[in-house]
Image 1 (cartoon, rainbow, N blue to C red):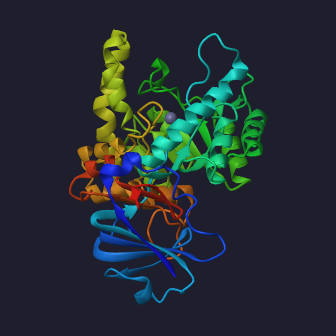
Image 2: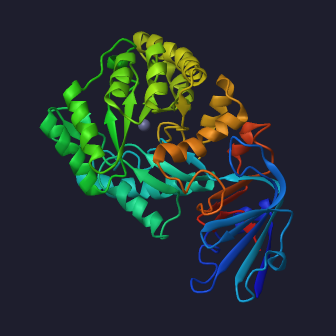
Amino acid sequence: MSIRFIALVTTLLALAPSTSWSQAGGDSEARWTIVHAGTILPVPGQPPLSEQSLVIEGDRIDRIVAGYATADSLGLDGGADITVIDLREYFVLPGLMDMHVHLTGGGAPAGMPDEADDVYRMTTGIINARLTLRAGYTTVRNPGSAGWSIFALRDGVEAGDLEGPRMFVAGHTIRSSASDGSGSCYSVESCRQAVRRQIAMGADVIKVYATCSGSQPCAHKDAPGVFLEDELAAAIATARTRELKVAAHAHTTAGINMALEAGVDSIEHGSWLDERSYELLVETGAYLVPTLAVKDFVRAGLAERSPEDRARLEASINEHPRRVFEAFQAGAKIASGSDAGVSRHGKNARELEWYVDIGLTEMEAIVTATVNAADLLGEPELGTLEAGKLADVIAVSESPLENISALTDVDFVMKGGTVYVGLHP
Ligand SMILES: [Zn+2]
């Protein structure tokens, strides 16, 4: 039996090679990891437990047992490769999930030809994927990107060649437009085609742009949705042919409600939700992905805006958080999404601070980034630490149930049984 004992030494993190543990353990013999957790929150929404052992075989959780188990007490096979990780001074919880990030950025510097964009997006994406994983986010959804880089990034991470979170990507956003971009469409026929094109590229989810972007004047509170009903219905029906979910970018009341009535699975942003939106969210079971972290960025840029834009954006800064909380109180489900790319990569947990600021409890905020996110993705193997699930595990030094900001400083990150942050042998 070969047993390694690993202590968590946070001050030495910067010195620890990032990938030294990626290759740890053989593929042929059984690989076990025993995590001694001072406090563990196996299922957000249920109370935490103290002094437990999280037992992981390969990339999956085998069981959680009370006390600090040893290989012998667990009766593990004598020939197994066993690592014991000491998190007795830490709060352990499932890896966090951000349902709205744009990892691949803007493209090539000005003056370069269009075909250069994708390789520049790829390098940006590699950096941001690493930042995101190291911030404790083991899964993300990327609703909308350009080119092919997001697919290459997802697949490179999945293959273990790149460091990053599990990624569920939308490809190009479906927009109502007569331009010939890959996501553009303006009829039932062309909207079907635009969605089929994303499916062919390898999309995991479809994103539709149901209203103007938040910074545009046409995203004012009373503006209509930008699709015609039959176009939106065609896009959603086409996504359903491959059992893909549909995320709708929507700011205006009419656009939000039209998208919910058409049957989307999530509303992204939802700036001008109204009472009817709350009802529709509850009735349809669609998620709200609030992206409140963007407010920090919008507020910081207000001075450069025209007086009209400023008034509109200030109104949204004041109203949006309140409406998100009203929706929550009405029974709408929230899945955490930070819009990193607009907000800052690697600062995804800022979104959870926002939820607590508007009135959610710390536990409710954590649920949005774990259990609810997994449900929105339709991925039953993610979101909790239970037998059979993928071993996506993080740890922080302070209880996030007392201070949600603890999640902005993560000391340990494991994804699929591989440790990326926090081990120093
Ligand atoms: Zn976005």
